[in-house]
Image 1: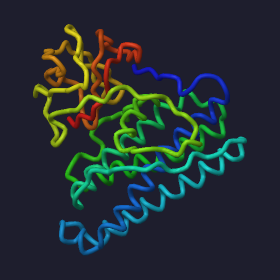
Image 2: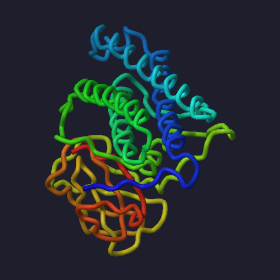
Image 3: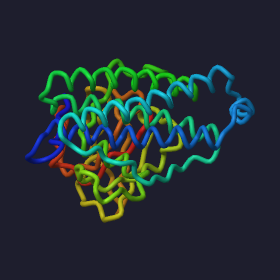
Length: 278
């Protein structure tokens, strides 16, 4: 089973979780609005996507915009000031790379809601978060199908604690307004040298870090409700392992200082997560 890390110390924990959710929704909202401004229906047609797909994409964009509005309302009702959108840099260059990134972001968002659920103390907030999670999961499946991936590749959605989710989101955040609520600081993000394409069980992947990785480190994978640690082959700032059995769909890889097989321990994290599609 996986475990979750705290979203913040002291104060109103529910409010912190709501601000965390809003930060992710702002990112998705700006992501879709930007793509719809950059690409026309003809661009999608030229890339092999139908008019129906383009129209459904507009529904997804509307959903994300609505999620932002609902979360802002909840935060204000709780006595808080909603976080404003940040400045982002999304590395897509064409329709196909946009859709691929969309599938990854939607999956991260779904995992973030699932991972934050145990931190929510208010029953009403839990219902609101669950309602958003369900729609994010629909978005994930739709976009995965659009790029030829299995929509429901794992019997279980993978939960991500707030620190892990924010680490992934921060890859696209250039800067945020000073007045925004401070969110959980992320871990160093290890680059996945195989991130461009899905990998099979038994294939070797290499994660890289900005700092030297200690000898004896592990790569710990979270996939669905499965947590698997594999002793890595460390070479300076990189670590290589073979993909273990039991992983499927969008999974997450962490560099850890110990074997945390079965139950994820965030205190063991050296860097992570990296996205791995299995």
